[in-house]
Length: 194
Ligand SMILES: CC(C)(COP(=O)(O)OP(=O)(O)OC[C@H]1O[C@@H](n2cnc3c(N)ncnc32)[C@H](O)[C@@H]1OP(=O)(O)O)[C@@H](O)C(=O)NCCC(=O)NCCS
Image 1 (tube, rainbow, N blue to C red):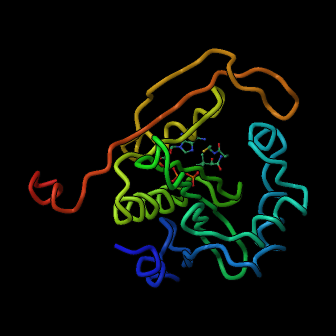
Image 2 (tube, rainbow, N blue to C red):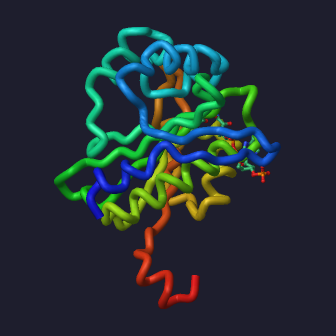
C-alpha cells in the first residue's frame, strides 16, 4: 500500500479509555508552537533521556519544516488544539535495515495511563505493516521501565541490553535496551486466525 493512501485515512477520531474524544493525525508544518509546548510539558528528568534537545524551538522548527513522512512519520493525538501524544515511525529507506522500522513515543503527563501511547503505537504498527516493513524496533534507556512495559503489551520483547552503553543529555551512562517485534501481513494474520 502507498504511504499517501494510508495518510488519507487521517484525521481519525477516537475516544480515550476515560471517554475523552481525541483526533489522530500526522504532524503538519503549522504545528510548530503546539509541538514545542508539548515537549516543554514533559518532565526534565524524562527529557534528559531523549535523543534531541526538544525544548529548543529551533529543533522543533526544523522537524516541522523538513516533514518527510516516508522517512519519519510523526503521528499526533490531539485533545482539541492541544497535542497530548506523539509517536514516530522512522524508516531508513535503503541499506540493511530497510525492512525494519523504529518507533518512539511520548505522552503529555496529564494524559498518561489512558491508552494514548497504546493508540499511537497500534496505529504505527498498522502503518508499518501496510508499507511492507517486516519488523519494528524501539530503543530505550534502562530507566524507561513504564515505556518498556507499554511496548511489551504491544507485542515487543527485549532483544538486547547493553550495560552503560548510552549517554543522556548530561553525559551520564545508562543501559541501552533494544526491543522489537515481527510484523505479520494481513494474509498471514488471516491464515493464522490471529
Ligand atoms: C511511556 C509512555 C509513552 C506511556 O504512555 P501512556 O499513554 O501513559 O501509556 P498507555 O496508557 O497506553 O499504557 C499502556 C500500558 O503501558 C504500561 N505503562 C504505561 N506507563 C507506565 C508506567 N509509568 N509504569 C508502569 N507501566 C506503565 C501499562 O501496562 C499500561 O497498560 P494499562 O494502562 O492497561 O495498565 C509515557 O509514560 C511517556 O511519555 N513517557 C516518557 C517518554 C518515554 O519514556 N518514551 C519511551 C521511549 S520510546
